[in-house]
Image 1 (tube, rainbow, N blue to C red):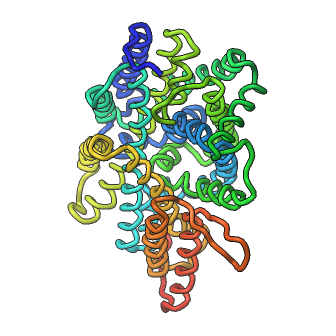
Image 2: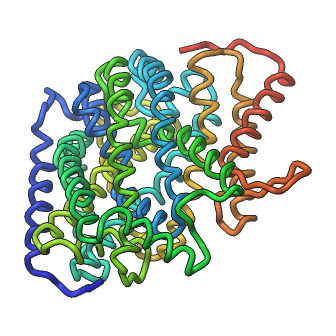
Image 3: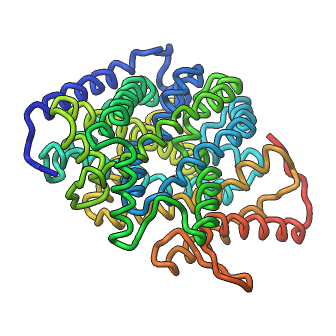
Length: 491
């Protein structure tokens, strides 16, 4: 993989990056309401996004640039085990179809902007609200930082080194997000997704022909796995439980994140969400095709400094410069959309569930809007500092915790949509056990998300997020039975 500047690739990259930058600033005038100075308008696009806008937006912030980089990298490194992302993005949509319209209705009817708003409205507990809000922000920060990992891989392939290109890209992102709010990533998502589809279809159609066909691709990958004694084209018997629980846990966690919930709350109706639960699996097909690029990296005999370089290196090696520049732009823009939505989701949490709850309960609608805008800038700066000051591997390790942490918000957020039986003390106790117990297990296992269990026979590994969630629910049920019942208004 060469890291010298390719003028043609760089020029194409700059053109498309400039295009979406202009679109980001134009978005402030797209569907502009009479008054943008309201958190509903800035942070949720007025809750008026229809089926197609929601499809592009949710798809854009769910299937991120890091997905484009990390899934093929994982498949390149471990083989079949890396495909757990496919069943997870299939299992998630029945959950979205059943649960998210109910959640959207609760938020719409009561003017809730965040998951923590919903929890406070249901249980009336500031402590539980704060726990949900803090979890959302903490889990989001490394996720934003990992979008920068994807962009770093692209800049490296373009021959742009150091932190300056990354800083410039995120300053531009910060400015148009500050100006247009959620409308900016919603508009840019149209361009991003179309570009990604073009890139993936071209790659899947052309790369195998350059590498001797799919039979040669799989044979080369299998030979490399056997030579290094790690990885395989099929799952080993001791990987089944880990694979299944990773898929299930990831699916349950996916729409607990602030950025995916922001896309849900911004939808115009419950039916819009149901239609998207039917349409969004098209992205799963895209993800499956992307994952195969990991195997193609073996057949291309790439020399990589990091597995994260496999996709950029493939395009740089096997395509003309102009298309490589187009592909790099698609990946970089694919980082900007989710990073923008993540920063908006985190800003909404800070504004509604910390600033309004503890600092200024009488803050006006315009005041909320201003606090959210400023907070979104701070979040982006924080994420940039994470990736600049900490080793990349540390950011990756933090992301493993992020999924486990955010999964612990599910009982408080979802159970109350269907039943008044649970009470705040039980759910808070469950969250404490799940959050801190899951963190401890990850630490105990060397910052790995899996834990070995033996039930009298051969040990097997389980995703820690599922173990922590089970403990969370059990503790919530036990405490709920012990704590005397008291009336909790459902709002």
